[in-house]
Length: 405
Image 1: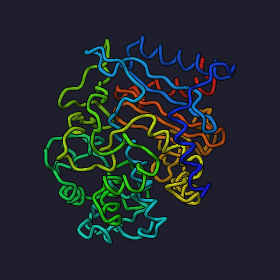
Image 2: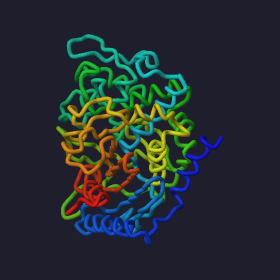
Image 3: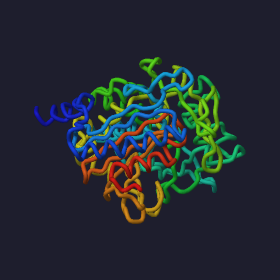
Image 4: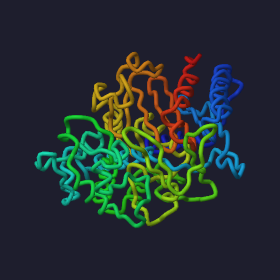
């Protein structure tokens, strides 16, 4: 009984335990993090942020800063709701792995067992076999439209990446049909390529779990962990942070549709998607939640997975299934199930320990877990892309480790 309940007590304490400013090391940490956050706000690189840092299961730093809505002068609060974008991926990946633990799903079974019509072909016309493992590791041969020009095949097929709302009422089944109509970028299992794979995985999870994806994720992940604010719909619109995009002299408030240049094309945002109950549940980009909720998920993984995953499953999830040659977050980074894994800190020029894992979200988020040092960090902003891939997450990381200038 204790082994099942103890992790819940640990993650519940994360939302309650204040940082301890009387501890000298924590005072220094707070000063460094405050400096990084204050600079980013003063330089108008971000509009608002919530940053949480836990060490060995205790929150040692927490801060909400800036604005949730700049024009309304609504200050950021720690319980602000954010559009999670790709932070949905590890949540849905955990749901899939929970089904593996329950033997309702197998990593190496073909996707067609659950989605018989999903049969994309290679460029030469051959039908390829895609497995659940390849969806989890982004080695399925799929891609994202924002890596392509406006004339790219995903755009021509009108594939949704889960962030847009170009076609209100578009169903997941129809989007899967469109994805399968486009030739694969490479033979499954031969390369790493970030993609809509987690949207496909979400459909598999729904079929294997015997219910719509939101209900399966709630049953397997968010409810057991007490992530009461996290889901595929907004629980309290008044707490939803207003999204902004990089701009000069300050970030630009997103409208109904906004495109941010990225890769070979641009990411198309439709902030209203989070409030549209007709929008299909995108496993790769469709969830909304809080920093505190996400910290609960990460802490459960760092502590061994209970009450949602077996420890052996977490070990697989957080081990590099794809090697550092893929450079999933630059040199030295491989990929596990749902997140990048640091294989070579020297090549990555990172103070993080080997075995750290991390990812982010296109609305402006970053997170990482350093299991060697017992560190768990969540940094949500409402500014894309600075909060995800700009200087801000690097400055926070270096402030945490005390390696900055």
